[in-house]
Image (tube, rainbow, N blue to C red; front, side, top):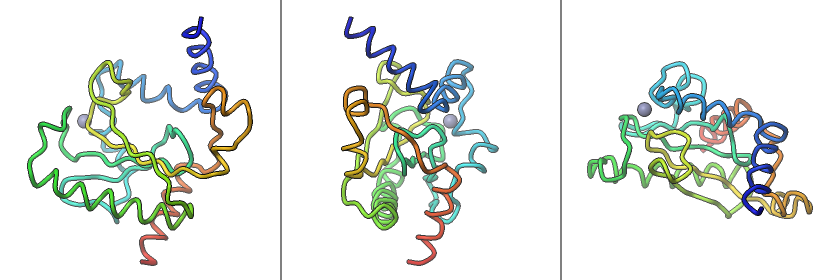
Length: 171
Ligand SMILES: [Zn+2]
């Protein structure tokens, strides 16, 4: 029963609050990798922030406002496939993106996470980290949100991309 309720709420989230997330699921089923797709990279990547090994992408199917992803340039499925150089340069990417999101969203709270493999809940197999700033106003966003995990996205991915580019250029 608990599973049914949670599954139902998850569908509601996808259809009503955040209809976007189905997009990535679709790609996953088709075995088509969105993070190797030039059109998607052009739409979502922030060229100002990339380095030799990693892209920064705004998430078009965000969990919460401000959700960006650090995506490996190579199509990798596991952390164990990273070279020492790729692993090392990831640290700077996390630091820099956190700094910019702190500035934009005026918060020191973050979720930084990764899902790996078919049973993890990952919708895209290609190695990527989710960086999600957390704000008090969202945490206290009402009883329905607290019970179900539903969140309302207020900032479009394109607007987020513009804000990040602007914040980075002001550094
Ligand atoms: Zn890929």
